[in-house]
Length: 92
Image (tube, rainbow, N blue to C red):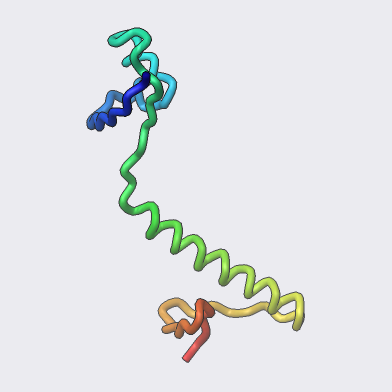
């Protein structure tokens, strides 16, 4: 019967930073004893960057929709405060 154990390994060398490479490495150390290996990256700024990208995409889509509806190009003023309500940004 298979038992479940979890092992956290930090500071993994670059050449072993894939699931397959890590599995092969541990399988050579412990032949037939390794069920799986997963590499999880710690990227603390990823959520903040993803949210910033999502806001930029939303603004671009809104600008494109405005252009298609009116034929006029929207303007962007750097530093202008925005108001957010129910996930929709607008100017105060």
